[in-house]
Length: 263
Image 1 (spheres, one colour):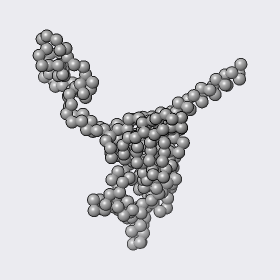
Image 2: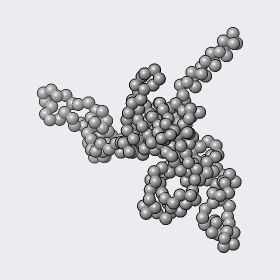
Image 3: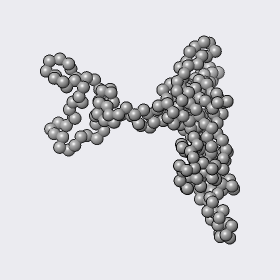
């Protein structure tokens, strides 16, 4: 099962450590504080699939006043909106507080994201999502914002090589060089030209990281691989969108067995 449209978790990158496997192998891992996350809203493809209790406050108010209530419109897709890390009410807008109140929360959430699903979700507003969603999962995709590295040259930012350091090249070893125009730059710099500039602070998704251990008691995920962002930075964790190599191996074995049986 791929993770393109499955429920994931929001979390915070804690730092790095190492754990030992049963065979004594030392594995470097990144610790992620994943959840617990609160379900703030549920999106349904059709209006009939919405739970009865999940209606807007204005519709309930109109019902009390005797006004005619219009049926809830369809969202057009299946999704679960979850929030992570409490935020005090004084830092929230009234719209945010009103939205969270439907889920039974008196405060806001610092990180709110929506995870699309293939089928109608069974979760309801107010439910709690924990690391149990990753039971039996061996690989995950982690999305986050990379570290900011300030203004960087072409060598650090794009991996350009240095210019020659021999005779005739005076103090021009790490510059970017020509811009690629044949006659002039009157038409401006070509779009997409790799030049010096701001490096980092970009949304990056690292795919198929190994999920070494799940600590359900402390809501911790131990992931082997490069997790984007700095310590205490927010991340999104979901099932990997890449097919497991184990599944591919099983499929090949089944095909080989079927071909052997035919012979």
